[in-house]
Length: 312
Image (cartoon, rainbow, N blue to C red; front, side, top):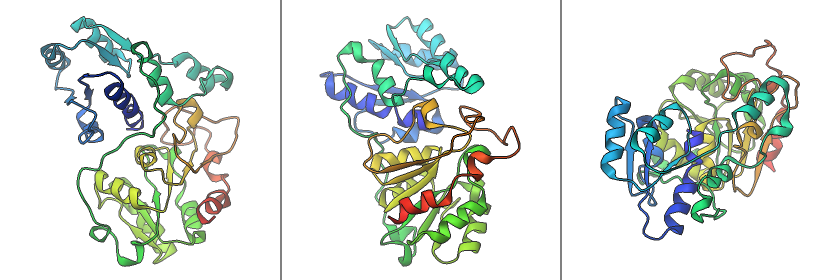
């Protein structure tokens, strides 16, 4: 999800800077919501049941150019099978391997993923417009549809979900942070963290309102867009929140933003909360448990770092 949301400036710049261009976007069906309401897109395509069907769809469109921002085996087969001219994002796989295996950080390109994506189309004369990422909410909602009156005026959105365990703070730390925050807090996440959210709510009290597993993603994005400030882990909803320029405290454990180039992009006020350890990062995308068993990357993050940012 995070990788795809960071492609939106490329689509916007292509559409705005190449007169008359039609821009189509191909992604997995489960990620189509990111582009469903994007005004810079001419047409949205999703992968079919077989690659052969997807390739047939692409050939039918008679494209002039493919911009491949994924650069994996599937996109290589698509480019080879269609014989359409292509520009391809250069993945820095070797440098990431050096960081994970040997902690050789000097090989990493320090620029944001958005800037690296835009390098792919610079031969077309396309330049970075230095605007934030794009997300367009599907429907018109009201806060009263989702939140009690006590949480409708000025609240903190705390995104407690993440795909992998090593990206999440333990419940007890979330509880301690929430107890020190001076504003109402709305917990956001999927059904997988619904039980966690109930534990946090019961421990903290009425300042917490739990929407985990209740709101869908688009509704959760709406709530983030109305928040006073946002706290989140390395997960898609946290990255999407950058589209609304909310003060953001992003908390990093087993993954690091510099490895992936996904530090907060073009927002006015942000905190990257993480600590330096010899074992960090332990993976690119997160793991189901700490490889060394101590989980210091999350447990040793000072709670006051986050609390002070939110309360200031």
